Length: 219
Image (tube, rainbow, N blue to C red; front, side):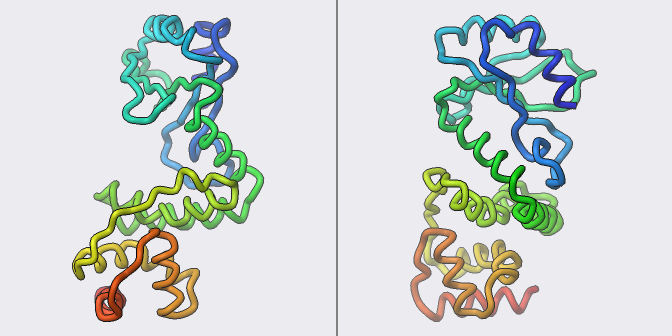
């Protein structure tokens, strides 16, 4: 499916680009993935970007801006119903986001055990949160961040601002508990891992214990 889209794009932009990269979950053999292909068109710099936008517009692609991510330009597409469903981005070769995409992809392609673990987490997250994309993303974040640490992408790990009210701790622990339970041997280690992964300190033993007990009571 990626090759179909690539061959659709390439003739229009071949003289302006460095390459077309298949990224995201569908680019890794054996990784659980939604049937949506993620693609980065790589350009040298923004000197050719306006021309690329014009060429892609002829194919039915509409530039949406960077959507809040520097050096990653997003495109929607119209009139290409026969193409496999996909997300298209254009990035200069020095883009940090492009570096993240390629590094993460290549690490998984070369580490089948990480693929197995990440697939398991994705599938469990989809089962637990079928109606909440935010909770699904939050659930798989610790696994992603562990992979980031392995492939030297620590700079992309976000520090989370989590308040210390009991109900908010309970929600966080409920979200992460199934994954953390699978990698932690006891309550103390589980909670230590939670603090480490989230980048916050859970204040007060009573708060932490209430959260842990709350998870057990409702699991």
